[in-house]
Image 1 (spheres, rainbow, N blue to C red):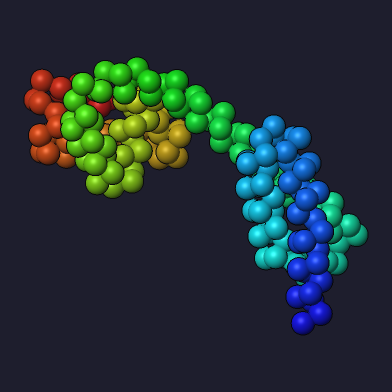
Image 2: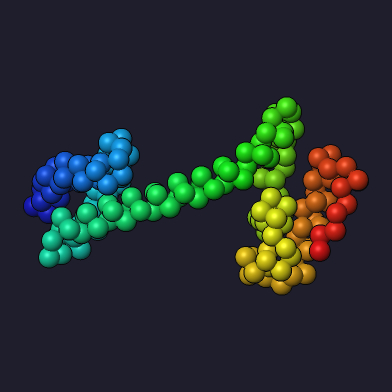
Length: 167
């Protein structure tokens, strides 16, 4: 019970400091509060270790800033994806139903096939690069890609004219 009380007191006292420092760091009060909340969730999950640390507050702030950095990396990645996706989305916006059908068909593929297809045709990696990314032999990439294209053809999403080599 005493341990629970100490945790509650720590979270109550640390919340404003975490939210304030994160707000300055990320430039958004709303994001800072989300990150501070996630930090305190992690504090709760590791309370015995946190409480035994030389500075529980420093532990919490290190976690908070790591979460903020991870968020920043995810946002940068998302921004790069959006830049690549915009031309694709623009080209299919005229037929939203087709775009949704393609997305659903991709999601129905086994993971390895979906991954191979995306890396080969969306990311425009070579077979060799795709094999390196998937950590598998090049022939496995070709097989996954062929099977994925066959599944999309069978679903009526590709016509027979799209018979580009998988290699």
